[in-house]
Image (cartoon, rainbow, N blue to C red; front, side, top):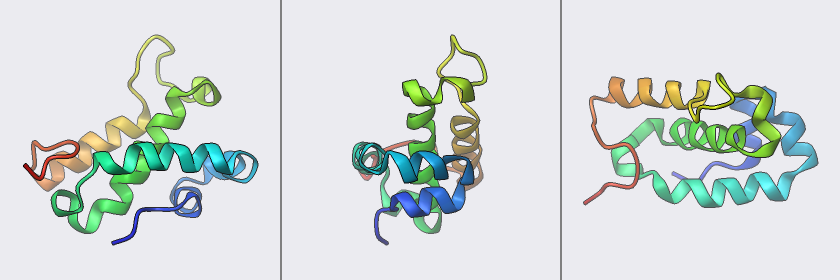
Amino acid sequence: MAVPTPTDLADLFPEFSGVVSTHLTMVQAHIDAVAPSFSESVWGATYRMAVCLGVAHSLTLSPYGTHARLDPSSEETVYSIKLKQLRKRLGTTRFLLTDV
């Protein structure tokens, strides 16, 4: 399975379509930084969604996403909560990189 693209992020989360269209390089940098933290063998068919949730979370923590945080003093976002729910549904305690 291929690493998601900025278009994949905008398709899954239309709230980022403006950021994708105006800051494509920045979004790609977030994808490049986040994607290696997710193992395809752990996430399986949900890999694309998991990476996009991770990227959305990362973007929300960036200065561009301050308004999207649940609590400005917290690093928890809607996307991190959904990622935790997906992990729980998969029945894995592995959150990120862990093929080891």
